[in-house]
Length: 347
Image: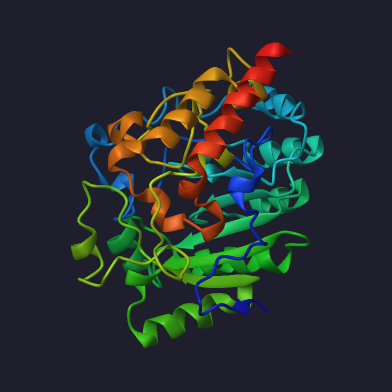
């Protein structure tokens, strides 16, 4: 039976003190963005906006399998394994017809300690569940958008058979083998004790861990105060207190590869910069290359100088951990990055 995680903490291991580990020759996390489309229009997400308001997500909708295999093959050249390869970003990964093949290819390449998918779960079938489990998926993170079909209409503008949705998760969990199933919901969808209890009663028996996560107000065009019914939105996504830092740490430990092969440095729904293209360079070359290193040095110098997206962004604060704060060692880290660059140029 799943863990009753009332504290809202996402399951995970201990974190490394990032400032002591930089610069990283291998990212901790690479986020693969396999599909620039979604079958939901969740009220808190960029897909709730009209298409013209969303900005540039990707020049193509689905990542080509040849390009994907090239990315995974590239990752073999990193000195170490990634801590995580995550299929997520601004879209629904299960819309990609080859998602199970993608997981299997990465698993066979042994390039990551964990392979995760973040999904709304609505497209799960028994056949797809079997394929993902057999592929070796390490974690399936399912975002629940309500407790009934009516809730889904309200919260995600989606028409789903809620009973069938629950049964598909039940099937996945029952056959999960080594795949960890994590189910989560955002707090404003279950504000009363009765609704919280119903959420746990429905999903705790069919997952390994479960949590109610806090709403994160990260898109300026969305009125999160109205969305949340006036409740405070000053807590990090997974509990605790909201930390403050000027330096965003994401570009120091992660990268995202978009469906069109463009590489960006973070999880922001508006890109601060495009730092390369895997069509024209290998993934390690981009991670350790001049564009990425310049971005990091500018972030250390002054976040506002990186550009308006970074200047105005608060997304990183809602997933900031004490171990990730870099402000107190900006000069030391900058020197380490410069020395790393110099060593690379000398090779």
